[in-house]
Length: 141
Image 1 (cartoon, one colour):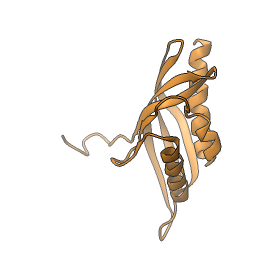
Image 2 (tube, one colour):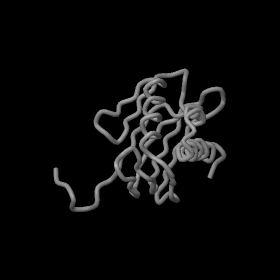
Image 3 (cartoon, one colour):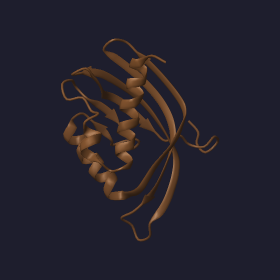
Image 4 (tube, one colour):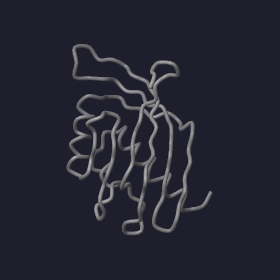
């Protein structure tokens, strides 16, 4: 694996680690500030085009989640050019849903497809989408 591919993986894994720690500022440090942003969350209304929208989403997530834990990735694919990178990753997430009558432990898979650009010689997330796959046979198109 090249040094640049490893740097992209490190950016994404640091972002996820800081998400698990509910550290908004460190999560935000992985997001680009000098180019446009477009991130899709798992809900149909989660379309983020600014750092303010992303920060607000983190606040919503962290007020509803505790004890966040990412599992080891199952699948990972990285492509890198000098100023643009793409990563696709699947890993499990476990957390306690809070803010309701009784807390509930949740465990599911997450899939991310992220685009990163170089900003001040560091890889930063500028675009992407998250998905939570359904179990086979639980939905139809």
